[in-house]
Length: 125
Image 1: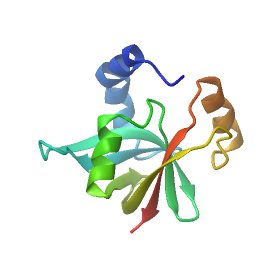
Image 2: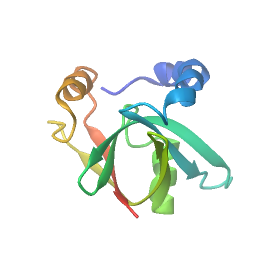
Image 3: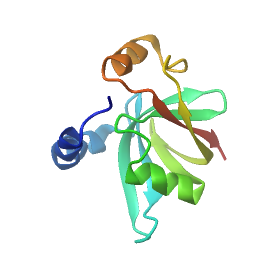
């Protein structure tokens, strides 16, 4: 079970507007900068993101079929705003991991409670 569409709609309207202001500056959060597949419009999507040896991993709390994930996959990459830096990322790949191995302990526990087991791995360009 990932977060429901009702929660997603609330977050898009309310939570993301607040989180979007700080997401690029606090640990565990960032903004994925990507372009719409059809519109070409630039978007900034707040995400839970964590450093791994090759680059970064994003917890897909709404699952792997969201528009922003499909945009990143279609473009073969994106940019990440995190901790005050802008980082070019490439080679996106979806990974299903029921054990959430690359997540910090507390995050792993929380994601397990809400049933998140899909992640987007990205390499530094």
